[in-house]
Length: 365
Ligand SMILES: [Zn+2]
Image (cartoon, rainbow, N blue to C red):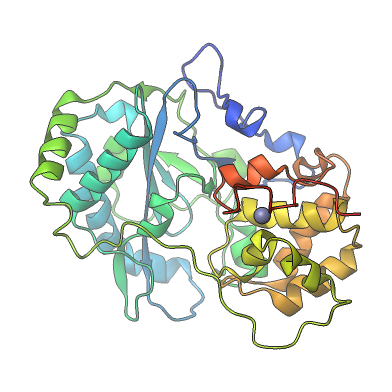
């Protein structure tokens, strides 16, 4: 594994997460674990924002991807990425635009200096409006486009260069081949005639370093102008804000059931369980609460989750794998051994009760 750093003296460091967001694969028990977090533009002191675009194809049906299938669809997917790149290249230098081949799709991303949360939102909406690429979420036929829901989520865990698609292959059965996430330069990308599969960790390509782009005054002017004349709002192809959903549980919950305790004082943890789009970090908060406040055992936690969750991507084996990490020494998940603080829940928008009514910052027993 090769560590990657941003061109800052402080390295990749975001205090909002109470520590470094950069995770070395070697420090984590499972090999080739994927991921780092996106920069939280809201509280990152350097005001560096990450723009990240996930280009993919989706059919809306369950299918197992093969290399042949990916290559059959490659040129149409390439068109989507080219469209996005052509727009971004009007404002940013090509050596500071990064592309990753994740196994069947592509990630296009760059880092922008002096970009606060408002500017990030202004830009991301403007770029998506200008490129007019379809959203691949909730489609019912083969669609080439962008996973706009993920792109708009500012705190999504992103698979990093060098990680592999083992979860997709062995747990989710979405692909029949192993592939390592690898870097592709912009020039190389334009030349591609087939999908750049990478089947061994030795052949993974890394950029030499990540460099931030300077603020583009031109893009800023254009985005502000577009906003003031309302072009953004007139675009109904984009659903730009996603209200968080909580599905009602139809059934009786006994008083002696742990799930009852999750609704008793404040429903923040219950909502995490019942929200089909619950983020991974919210699920981690829930597990910490169940372990350190409610003092449940692993099996009890899995039973509770299995019985009551409404997660649209729920997969018992993957959930068990991640819950296990909270009980295992030396993992990222087991570093902090206490329930999440109330302020943390509020900060992440998970608890709406800003007054005293949320008791979940305290120990339960
Ligand atoms: Zn609460």
